[in-house]
Length: 199
Image (tube, rainbow, N blue to C red):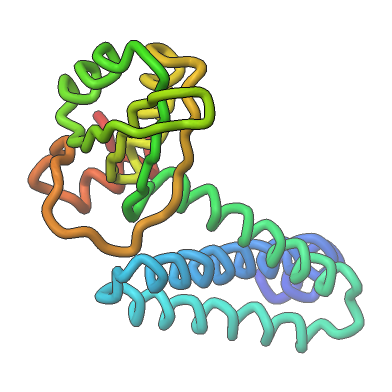
């Protein structure tokens, strides 16, 4: 069977083409999700390039759906690709950990162990005396890179499992004490996305 026969076969029409549409849609929606996240976090330099790829891939996917209007699987693949692309984009954002977060930690007693642990991994903090409904408390404020979210949560649960804390995203911050991520930020984020880059 040559390529022309393959393109006209039922296998291509009902299996290969829907799969290609699905993959294209996953790619373009993933790029669109990342583009919006980058914009929200003020990372603008890469956005036009992502937008170009996103629209190019979307055009390919839509053109193939329009060429195969008689194939219900094409519509299904298009919709499934959209849903999967959103999920993949969110997971990629979680792995990249772009942006900053503000932790507000309220501790009643035994704060020093947590403070020492934060200092050991070079995370800056501000300690404030406060008053709660049941007596005096310590308030710890720290702004971290999202890549260190789980690490900080683990320290809190280890040293002060009863502590109350809240977390929110921070759009911008000036100065601060953060753990180093290395001189090559691109390689650092590639390693977070794809563990194979670690070797």
